[in-house]
Image 1 (cartoon, rainbow, N blue to C red):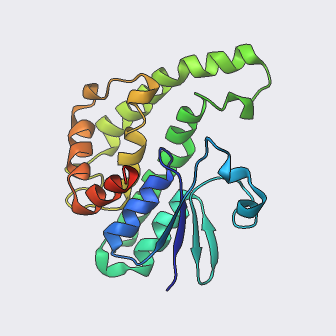
Image 2 (image 1 turned 45 degrees about the horizontal axis):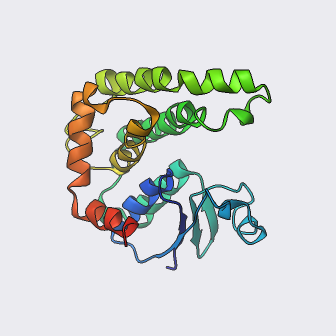
Image 3 (image 1 turned 90 degrees about the vertical axis):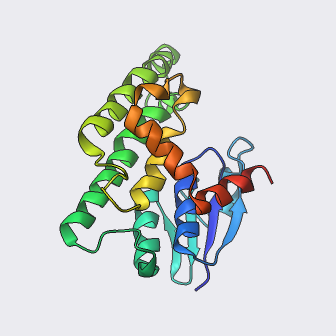
Length: 206
C-alpha cells in the first residue's frame, strides 16, 4: 500500500502523522507551510480542494478530515491495536474524536479565523478574546467526564490519545495554563514519551 500524508507542523495533521508511526505504516511525508499558503496552491487544490491538512493519499484515492484518517489507518493496520475491537467501545472512540473535531478544534479556530463566521472586525476580536474561556470549558469536560485514564479510553493507547495530545498542545499558545488539567497534563507527558511520538516530534526540528 502506498500512503502519502500532507502535513503542516502546528496543525491537527500531527495526530495523523503520529498514528501512521504508531501503526508501523510505510508512508511518504509531504510537509507544507500553511503560513506560506501552501494549502491554497493550485497544485494542492487538485489533491484536497478543501485547502486544508491533513490529506492522506492512498491507493484508493485521497482521504481528508482527521476523524476519517484516524479511523482508516487502524482499520488498515489492525495489528497495531489503535482502535477497540468491540463495537460499542469503537463507537466511543469515534464519539471522542468527533468532539475534538467539531467542538474543541472549532474553539481554537476562533483565535485567528473569525473571518470564517463574520466580516465584522469587532466581532472577530470578541471571538479571539473568548478562545481561552471556551477551551478551558472543553478540556475541563474532557478531564472530568470523558477521560478514563491512563489513556483516553482506559488501559490501551488509541488514536484518541494522539488526537488529544495534538489539540492539548495548542493550549499554551492560546494563553491557557495546561497545569490546571492535572490528568491531561500527565497524559500529554506519557504520549510525548512514546517512541513513535518522539520520532515524529524529532522530525520537526530536522
